[in-house]
Image (tube, rainbow, N blue to C red; front, side, top):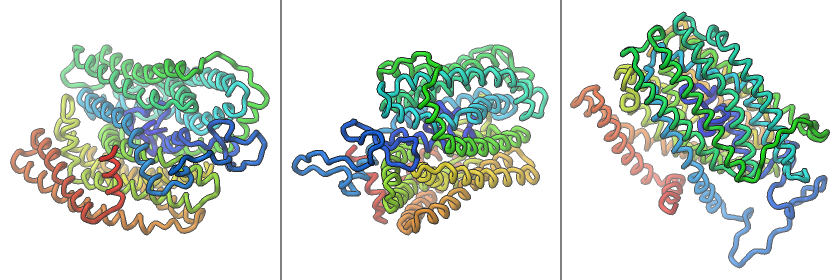
Length: 614
């Protein structure tokens, strides 16, 4: 679930070393997270809904006529009549503000992940930890995560709109029932921890360690769910900052945990048989503590918002009806999540068996970072416009916003794609070549990242398309598109399992399979939206992709020249990687920007203007 709330991945966790923020990182859930910022929430998924001051809303059951316009001051421009350029700039400014918390979370998350790799390496101990750390995400998503994301928010908004107490009693009941269910599910999962480990890990000593880690980490399920519910209540009450910054606390705690792990006495070279009990407990309990703190830190913000949690369990008759009204969407959401977890399980099984899972995990973490920082904030800002246009049946406006999101995503991500291809090994040596992880191990992560870089822009397109479908209150189509994607991923992974022979090649195969699934999803989504909305007018998108792609290739060539010169002079050392990354990155960026500016790409100039005047 978002990404994040800020780090979305299609099988999400695909990133067990970086556990999803709050409710998981399933892309469907991330798409629905953006609905929290949208003013259209009603359990009648196809109807126009109203939020805001009641004097602007019709009474329940009244015809959904537009409200009377407010008197305008001289020179004012009505919101609906604002020039497209003005509204686009406003959207970019909004997305910039949202991106600040995401950037802080990603930066501390990378530091945390780098330290984990240095402490645990990329082999058996790391695989056991990552498999166990992925289990809470998988179980939570399968049992409750997707349903919470899709159902909880609309129900709370509907109750807030229609109930005499602004939905307070209903929210208390929903939280009470869900918390009790989460507690029971978590206990069952902890008891079943050895079964989960047995199903995913073949090696006996590694399986035993994974089972212990799973027992320590599966309690995270409860706190993932609790955090998701608290986040939902806060966002319905227009409080976004606490949830956006909470993951930073989790990262800080895990960084402190790794430092404590290093301070313990233990073997110089870690393996499942020699790892001490103290080391296992510190890394396991510290990881869980981070998720606990990430959830509990929201309680003070909840009280500041004016909401007080009181245990209630008896539901009113009208509250039962609300659940029935969204059961269809929840069913498709669950289908989406189940399909995603099939992909997770296959990748985890093959990756662990061939000792490539941790390399794949960290390569995928790096691939998701640009999307989480640059594009999630953009799509969060564009979602309200999409929702309004879809609710009003304004297909042309939906198509316009789809094209705008695609163009801005291309400008943001294609240069990074080119940079990943030429700078990935320098980047991963700088980030991961410490402690238990050698330079060769770090370069293997970089090779897997470079192989998968082609999927970054298609991934953003898929996420944008899913937002369009959910803006149209369609849960069925995203589930079907995801089925195509998972089938593609599983087929390629199985092919890799039968043809590849080294951990490095397996890590590359897993990342390529994931990126290929994004391409398939983007193509299927485009065809489906064309049938639904008519011509998507993607000619302008193709123009921007071609222009920014050309600029990115020229910039990448300049960066590659710097990397080659650095390697010749300094070899494959850490210093050579630092020189290649910094020097190549700066030279490549300067060349790319110069070429893009000469090509007069409007989106580049808009982003530059927003940055200057922000």
